[in-house]
Length: 602
Image (cartoon, rainbow, N blue to C red; front, side):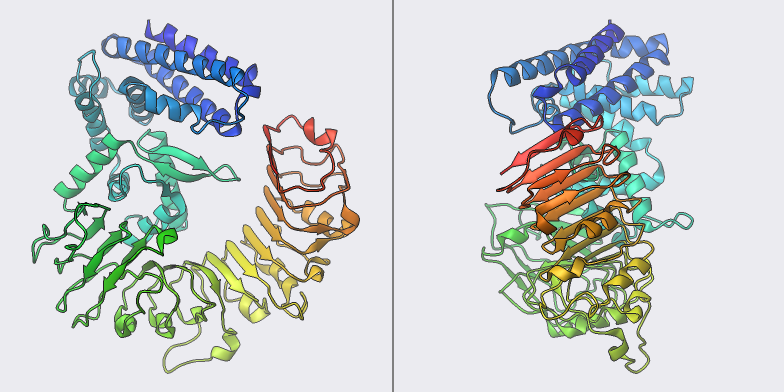
């Protein structure tokens, strides 16, 4: 019986977590916990379904449960026999690869029905529109997916279809996906919420519906990268092209007819066709290029009117030959740009792209005229050589991510004609800024910053010179990264109480300084890299690090590490990297009930 099979599978999962947990790595534990939730969802579905529905899925759910059970037991047995500490794939990834579509379909059904309005009419319609065949096939699963898509809320449909714009088996970074949804205008305002927060809620909704697969998580537990099943991607591409939402090409762009109205084009890599990728559609407004070797030419009389998306998502392949040709054009609303490091400069017409919203590329040079793009929301550039970027004249900026950037003092910028220096109300991300001076003038112009990264290279100046104690006035700052060369930077440094993640590279802590960090009421993630402790001692005081869940110590030398039993009560992960002279981990740490993993990488 299906319910009995599910109950047996649930018992195996709980046994694995409670008794065989020493044979699992952290990712596998998280994946099994996720599978427990999915099994519970399918159990609830069976309990609340009519007899007709139960009969329809009886055999499929039963068979899928037994197969999953066998694979889990086999995996644990292999792990016990093996001396290897880690496998290439986590257990859930093994299941995804080796199981038939039965288990995937069952999870998909559970995710779909958990969000549905459970009326008798809905159940009957569901049963009639999903194949009644007992043998699961790609066609059967496609029917389930089509049913899922058709019953998505309208606000999720475009977000879901957009997933098909990425290549097959592509690891999609959630942070970039959210920024793309916002830039594309797919996500609409909901009350006073940030658009990014709304987009993240939509993303998690799609995950709960089993339409998006979790691939990797961050240190704070949030999803870092995701994937979609091949059949899910096929549905997205098929429906998107039917709706003329986007066009995917694996080779030539010649199939896009002159005058056609396709708002988005995504170029995927194809080794068979290398030199004929010529963008010929004047109506394309968004271009996402995932090919490392491509020749794209924008027609002289192009009429690209809406969103510019520059997206080259293989920045590490900058050594490969790459060429993107810009041609002078009559329309000033060009929004499609692709730039490769060392191959060309930004064109002179860059200042004319007045509607540019999202820019992602590799470039060794940033022209000063970029600051004239007052509608730019996101700028992500790789490998620039210490550019100076005047962000204070760009009021719509939401995210600025460069390897290194130098910002002018806003008080020295003044005004230029009718253009004033703005308070950047929308700016949430700013990284990595060189020698950032946190004057009151600067702090008041970034009141809503949430993520900030700073690299201090001037050894002659200290924290007073850069006014670092003004950081405490950034009331919404959640993530801060400081790369420091001068030890004195951390002396009596105060941080905003809103801080959830802190990364410190180099610098030195006294006992009092580390206690300031330990007293932060919201701190969940702490990463210390090459940071020195005075006398190589870390002694915690009672009641410190009460919310910390993740602690990374990299290239840290400690002779003494004493921990009060009231500290780190919520710690889940401890990671030690490149430790060359490190004291033994205190028993107080090992005995923390919430601690799920201690990772060594020396």
